[in-house]
Each structure stands twice: as C-alpha cells, then as structure tokens.
Length: 156
Image 1 (cartoon, rainbow, N blue to C red):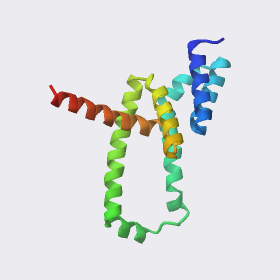
Image 2: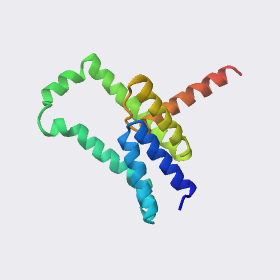
Image 3: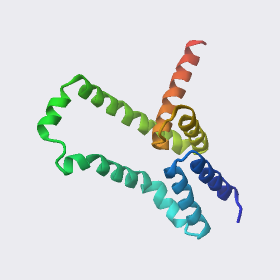
Image 4: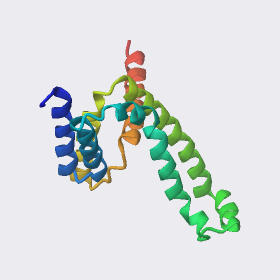
C-alpha cells in the first residue's frame, strides 16, 4: 500500500501542515483518500477539470462585493481611470499570462510541485508570506526561468 505515489502524497500532506497551508494539506489528504479508496477514476476528472472548477469558485468569491452591492458602478469607473486602477489592469493581465505559463510548466514538469511547496514554506516562515497556491508560484517560476535563460543567452 505504500507506493511511491502514496509516500509523495504523505510528504505533501506533512509539508502542507508544517507550512500551515490548509489548501496544500487538504488537497494532499483528499487525493490520498481517493488513492486509498481505489477511486482513481476521479484523478482524470480532477486533472482535466479541477483547475476550471477551482477558478470558478475563486472568481465567484472575488465577485461577491459586486453581487451584494458593496461596489457601485460609479466607483468602478472612477477607480479604473486612476493610476492604481490602471496598474491593477496591467497587473491582472501580467498575472494571468504568467499563471497560464505556470500551468503549462506544471503540466510538463509535475515534479516541480514539491519545490513550489518547499518554497512556499520558506516564504511563510522567513517572510510571513501567505501561500495562495501553486499556480501563482509556478507563474513566478516560469518568469524566473525565462530571465535565467535570457541572461544565459546573453552570456554566450
């Protein structure tokens, strides 16, 4: 019963608990339960639709202030044309681009997940950071890899 996959999930569960990342810990625990109950058919569903389902709920959570009337249309228009508003648009565009690249990076290099989690633990402990998820970390990793490759190309 202690396969490499099970041990990997246990390590991720322990790392998630240690880093106080409830999302990582809960995700590893749920996948471990799926694995141990032999419901592996759910892995394909989660792999192909899990990100979409997660993003759906994340987007709904972000839109609640609009839905319950806390944000007024006039405020949006006024804020949109301010410097912070324009920078928010740029930040959103850059972040979504990097997250898309990070998702591809993770799809091609699933083994990077452990490094992303260890890095998140370091960020929480050393800098008081908040682990918001592996997708953002993968996007930043993509950016760092691109910069390193660009500098490496310049040095040749």
